Picture 1 (spheres, one colour):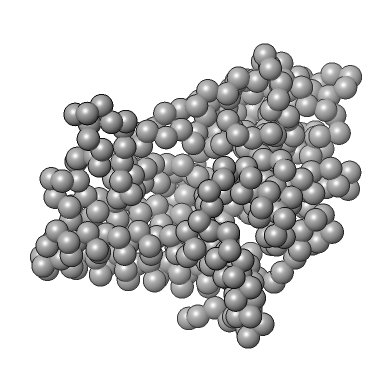
Picture 2: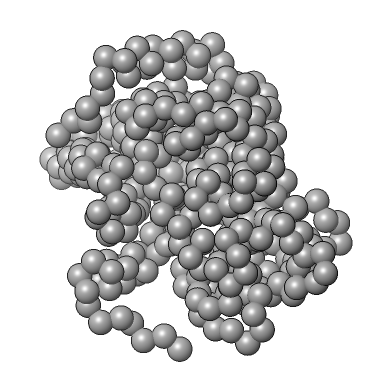
Length: 380
């Protein structure tokens, strides 16, 4: 199975490659890169509507852009949460005033967003959140804690799922609020240092943070429906781009196996072939479900497939390098800073792949209940 890319899409591929070749590698910071993307008209191409400073293209060209971006090894995005998650949610559930206010600065790369969902004790079980938002004359006062908040230390805004009905439980009484992050003394962002030495994730503490009344999305008490709609946008075309990155990592592992001599081991060769074959299978599955809403379990199946696959790739990367995999690239004896090479970073970071974005256990529960129709798990 191959995706049906037209001749016009291929002409578009040439435009994408020329633009990326003129801008990658990038020597500026991530925020300025977002503005450069916005200036080129590359943010919001998958929204399905235009008129907010973006341009809309069909699914074929979205695939072309995503795959060529990954192949060019362009900078990691800091604006994807606003572009890929919040913007489609506002288009589906927001008011015209909310769209006019928030979509243009997302499309231009001028405002960055983070996601205020998970909490201590309510990670994959999102319905267990305890953050409260109390209604006041001019909006809401928010108190509580969020965790694993990606890029909160860079974000201008956060969309927050909070409990607006006192005493409510589970899915009831939740609301979806848009909260400015620049509130000194009311919002405290604390980076979480990971095994890789980096800090993409954060704890975020809200102590009476303010959200304006007109920044409530979808109506009070309808937060669960809005939040679930947002999660439906989380996977799609970006999955194919992710697989391009996986293929580049697999090629690095193969090169390492050849360099170390591990490729001479028939067991290692078999494992490398298996990783390649499974990656092709993931691509075909993504193409099969792309743009289709009929297969309700497709996102969960895809997450189960790539999460464990990526972990096995990291494990294989360490295996083919032998004992040298445990040694960092820097001269630590001379006081060099903590460093990891690409394959060491792959191994350590991939340990979390079966947890973040919905743990494997949660994905299996979704498939069991929503697709196979098995009895629902009892909730407290």
